[in-house]
Length: 323
Image (tube, rainbow, N blue to C red; front, side):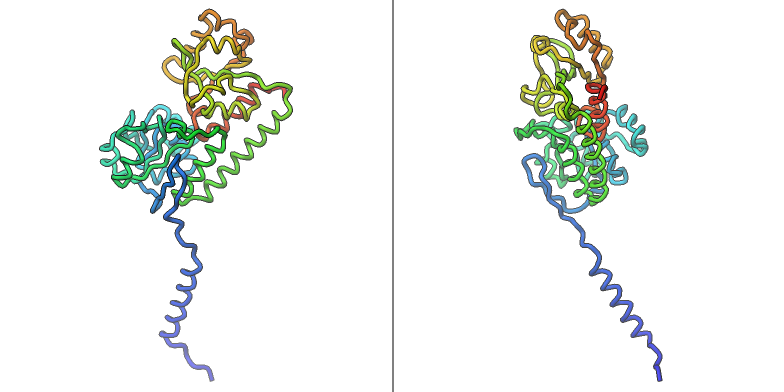
């Protein structure tokens, strides 16, 4: 004879099943600790009101689909608006400030995370730093390429970009998303390296950032150096300390690059810079200019960000198109 199941027994079984499910569920990964320049930074919870500085860092956030966790960005509205070609959700982002932020701007917006770098939204000894914001309860993650500005010397590679994306993935609790994105980027990099492997020469490349009394360029610790090397070339300024730096025009003439990559940025862009080089005595005789071996790339392609893979592919085609 089988008895009826009472309501108490049913409730106990449901409770046991619920407890079992809760025990089987993965625990929250937070707090998480990651290296940020010379700090081990701990983040207690996934940010919900984050702010990024400048379009390239904002595009890292967009690539990880974090717009729902962002209160806005600081920097060029034109460049962030133009990001919709790759990241349609950029259109939903709000500009908080055009130039470097003040602490008041971040506090008034209720920011709970700031993604920036040295010379990318922060200055050593300035008003907005990891230390000053940390005292206000706003954690900071520093762009890896910028760590050279505070003395951390490390040769740049595309691993800088991958490291930042993976760290952001941990901070925001979207590790799987970050790992999949980085895996795709690594595959693209490997394809380029395989294509240029064994090339008979590594063309000498001048990264032309700005004109004037001296040449603005990317030095030993700048992302363009990593891109040029991965694409099978050699930056003629790879022995100049610093990331975004300067060298004399005489040195450019003496090193006589095989190719020129122009950073298409600022008033007049690449066209203005090219006119300057073509009109300056000595420069106009560079073999790269005589051969018309000039490639213009955007700010977001040459500064650390998701478009670095696009830049890598373009530079490899530019230098080794015959392969």
